[in-house]
Image 1: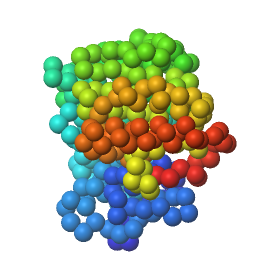
Image 2: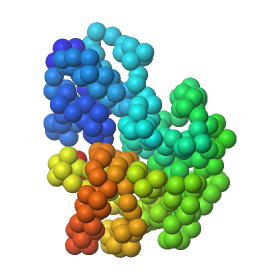
Image 3: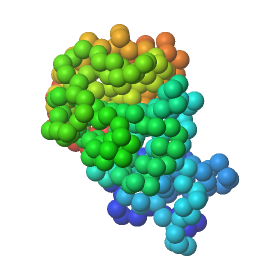
Length: 289
C-alpha cells in the first residue's frame, strides 16, 4: 500500500478512520490502510490521521513523517477547531477548542499533554476554561489548565478524576460556563458525565452520544456505558428538549453537522430508542462506529 502502513500498536480507537475515510478502514478489530492518497486533499486527510493517532501507529516504511504536515489545531467550523494529538490516557478521545467572540477560547477535553502543543493552541487566543466532559477524559486537564492559567471544570459525580478542579458542576440543572456556553449534566456513561452546549450551534457530547457512520444517525454507546444505561436514557429524556444545536462533537465517534431542526428530531428519536435499552456487560467490540 505504497509505503504507508498501520502498525500493531493500534487500539482500534476509530480516530484515524474519522479523519481519513476511504484511506483507512477496519479489519479484524484494527485500523488498516486501504490505499495511498491520490491527491493533495487526500494527503492532508491522511496526515490529520497520522498526527491524531494516539499510538502513532500510522507510519511509512521510507522514514519519519514530515512534522511540517501536522494540521492541528484544525478548523471544523468558524467557531471550533479539533485539537488532534489524541492521548492514550483518554482512550484516544477527541478534544476541541471553542473560539469565543471576545478573542478567547475554551478547551473541551484534552489532547495528549505537551507544553509545545499547549503554546500552539494558545496562539489562537487566551484559553480561559478547560471543560471536562467526564472522568475518562480528565488525564491532562490540570496540566493544560495550569499552563493556560485557566479554570478546570468537572461534575461532582466524577470529581475523583480531577479532585483539584477549580469549578465543580453540581446536581442536574444546567450551569452557565460563560456567555453562550452551558453545561448540561447527563449522568449515564459515567456518573458525572456532562455535555457542553455553545451558541445553540455546538454540542460537545463527550461519550454520551455520537454520530455513527454505520447507522447514519445519532447513537449512544450502550456497550461501553460504565455507570448506567437507564440513567443515560433518563438524562436524555430530561434534557433533550433543552438542547438545540447543529454540530454534534463527541469524544469518541464521528462528528456531524445538520440543520438544528433535523438534529432535534434525531435527538428525540435517540431518546426514545435509548429508553428501550437494557444493561449489558461492557463490550468494546460491539460499538458500531
